[in-house]
Each structure stands twice: as structure tokens, then as C-alpha cells.
Length: 313
Image 1: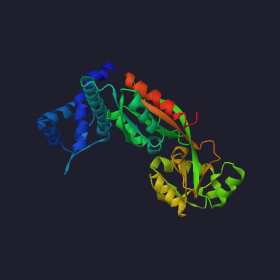
Image 2: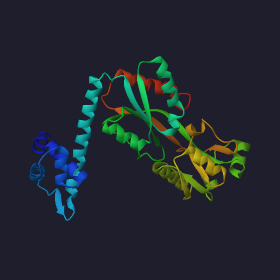
Image 3: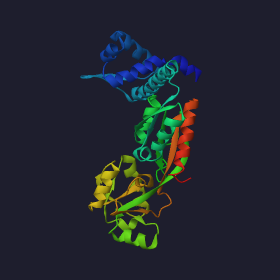
Image 4: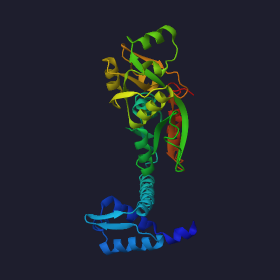
């Protein structure tokens, strides 16, 4: 490792990422207040150190080779780390260690996270600000240092999604069952009301389907494939209320997390448990590794306490 640290200039890697981001040496020079020859010299030295061509000139500017794109990804990571250092020091300098920036998906925001905010506002000096955000965006924001912690989830049917990362601590604190949302007038709902047995997704394979985000759609496909069919997805929305409206007027059926049903389910709808061992999502509290601020630990403890009323162990 030490040999490579001497050979590769981290600043040159960041410069290469900026070349990819801005599209030309001159644009990078203008943004950073350097001369264009200085940018060219950094890239030339990096190419010599790598022994590979990293940038090609084109009619419209420059483009990165495959080797250049690989190096640029590391430059982006270095830039994100440096940005995080600056923000962390600003927090310390401004005594913001008691201000925690939390992001969470909609279903968590409207249930246990709302209670976390209320409880901490009158029982603690820690100030928590909340932004609604889905897991992929939340993890990106955490990596960039623009937030302090995140509530995320991972579908059990999709273990390849949202894997743990060496830069983060991912602590699972509950399970959220998935439910099949149908009209109460449907045969599926009537059977469930009669026997209270979990529903096999194959019983609604002929229906149109309403799906959510990209990850939610992937989960629907995986569960449907396990039940022996491919769903006909005709509508896609992240809005739970829109999903209820669509199901209510007969535009299809949908899979929803139980958390989303705890605030309100329309009287004309039934949320049925699904007969599949993978029909749930694990919920995580995620923060950057090494961030041991007492205020952050306090938020984590309060999240775990509040979630017990809403999630399964």
C-alpha cells in the first residue's frame, strides 16, 4: 500500500474526477483558479504513474478511458472524504455536535420517527432535523457527509441490495412485514376475512399491479417469481395515498409495508399478510463508522425505543 501512496497523487485523482464531471481541462482550471497547463501537467503525471492513457481528446472536449473512469471514481471518493472532514470540523467549531441531521423513508417518517422528533424536542438538548429520503439517496448523502444518520431498509427477497459498507455501521433494529393491498370486495379479501390465513400471491397473478420505487419493483418481481408468475405492472408511484386510490378504484393490487398501513387504510381496502417467508424488509439505523458523538448515540437509542411499537423484533 505504501508504494502506491507514493506513486499516486490524491490531488491528481480528484482533478481527474473533475475533468470527468466538467468535461474539459479549461472548465476545471476555471473552477479551481488554476491554469490549464497546470491541469494538463497533473493528468500527464498521473498517466505516467499509471502507465496507461486516462484521457482522450475529442471534437467536443475530452473523455475518460476505462482506466480513467476507474481512477476518477477514487478521486470522487477522496473529494467526498475531504468535504466530510471540512463539515465535521465546522460542526465542532460551531458547537453543532448536538445537531443531528437524520434522513428516513416516508413510512418511517410518518410513524416512529415522528415520535422520536417529538420526544427529543422536549426531553433532550439534541436538535434533530429530518429529511424524507429513500435508501439509495440516503446512503449517498451519508457517504457525502451531508447527513449524520439514516433509517434505511432492505427487502429480504433482495439480499444483494443495500449491503453493509466498510465506511458505515448498519444496525438492524426491526422487521417490517409486507402486505398485499386489495379491495375488500375482492375474492382474495373475502377469503382472508373468513379464514385469516396469509395470502399466496399466485391468487392475484391475473391482476394489474401498482409498484413503487425501483427497489420496490425489484422486490415485487422477486416475490412474484417465487410464486410462479410475472406481474403485469401497469402503474408506478412512490405515493402511498396514490397507491390506495388506485387500488380502491380497481386499477390493480399492490404490495405495501405494514408501516405504511398503520397511519390509515381506507375502509374499502384490505391489507392481507403474504404467504412467503421473504415477505418482509429489515430496517436499519446507519451512521458513519467512527462517529461516536453522544448526541448521535442518543438519537440511535431513541429510534430503537420508539420503533418497538411499530416493528417486529
